[in-house]
Amino acid sequence: MSRRPPAAAISAEGYWDRYLQARVTRRAALRAGGAAVAAAGAVAIAGCGSSSKQSTAKPTAAVGADQPDTLNPGGAPRRGGRFITANSADFGTFDPHLGIQVASAYFPRLYNVLVNQSVTRPEFMYLDLAESYEIPDDHTYVFKIRPGVKIGPNNLGVPERDMDAEDVRVSLERIKTDVQTTSHQFASQYIDSVSVSGSTVTVKTPGPYAWFLNRIGLFFNCIAPKELMTGDLSRLGDKAAGAGPYRLRSVVAGDVAHFDANPNYYRRDPANGNAPLPYVDGLDVHVIFERATQRTAFLSGQQHLYLAASLEDANSLDDAVIANEPAFGYVSFTMNPQRKPFDDPRVRRAISRAINRAEYVERVYRGDAKPNGLVSWPLGSYALPPDELEKTYQPYNLDEVRALVKQVGGIRIKMIYPTNTSIEEHGDHLLIFLGQMEAAGIEVDKVPLAFTGWIDAYQKLNYDCSLALNQPYETPELPLAFHTTNGPFGDRSYIQGLGDPEIDAAVKKANEQLDFDARREAVHAAQKIIYAKDPAMLPLVSPIQHLAYRKSVHDIPAGIGTSNYLVNTFWLDG
Image (cartoon, rainbow, N blue to C red; front, side):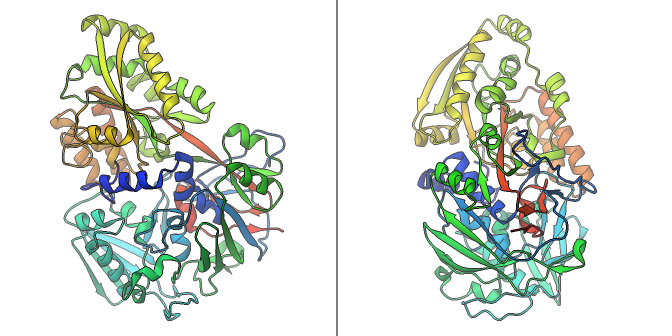
């Protein structure tokens, strides 16, 4: 539900259609879209597990919030070796503007983005194909294209030349005009025009849009050589040609993909005498659907990375360095404020105060999660501080709940929820939620629906309340939009919000702040205003996942979310 105009990359219907086709679990989806890329040395929030069998080395402290951390530093980098990993989902197409499966996690290894802003640490900006950018007014972005970003050897007949401004124009025009591209809705809504003058690209937007740099830097918006965008584009299903750090040598669907280092890659390591990157000779990515088989391969030294099933699983691994990564999807409780009893703010407040998020953290994730506010904690400094949430904005307080229940003459709600979600933890959330409502004296009539029936009812507002699944949200834009009059997608689907002009104005202000500090302040202010009105959409918790690396992997960029995928300084000592 997070990808539909005016605030998203693809349509909500398109996302759920693909979800139903893929039928992947939450963990497989994360592995395909995020953790898979850790195969090339990318993690999000770095740290070491508590087991004595694991590395006790701490990640280096970041120079500042605008810099990544480094996991498992190892002295002078060694060149050579191949990084081996596995994924539990197939690759899909390697077309950089269409792929949504595992291949999409490797787009930034094969191509370039203009710029990229970290999701988990939004202070961090990575300049890639653009060596600089300017925002001369609130609807104009001028990107200066970096010289020397050279296309690697390939079997598609693309010359080994420097990428240029025209490549940018052609890629963005394709994304804007081709309705099949993953980011079409974003580009068609927020890109008015793309013009080229020498080595500069000017992109015009309809007006101020705070999340433009986040969105333009998504890996679905990678810039490909213009030669690839002509002719039969189906050839990109298993082939690629770009100026990223690696090149695709071969891929066998359902089996393995081999990536070799791009000898023409422009980036160098300033911490090591400007040595050329990447350090490893290549990446070998296998498709192994069974987690147990992946674990065995990791323990036997056959692969360098394993996504652990839990913290307990991670702590049981020998000779491992553990990186902790936030998951961006979550379960929430959504109320329809246009229906009784949720038109009464006392009812919404009672349910909010009856939710004990610590119970989800412990019982569902065994401590491997953190409570969410209206903007989830993985979004870094955009989220409100945990202490404020717990004490001020969403305290667990049964005495207050019981008083509110008495005031309104009792609370009975009818709740829909999906029964066949393939999301591992949803059933556990359901049982805990029902128990918490019972303890608070709130009666719940359960309405279980097949997934297709649930999403249809949810989209059409044919519900009183729902224990809802949420797609990964990587900016505050969609989480805040749930509370606006027109809802998350501007068309009053899923939820209409409270219809409060003050909330609408606060969210609009946050969405128009181009300066980062002003935007963060506006996001905080909007959340506080929404809390004061008793929100109708309550995120629960977001879990932490654990990536286990062998100790032979060093200098892994960390702490900046998927932006790590762009930093290629990791190396192997054997």
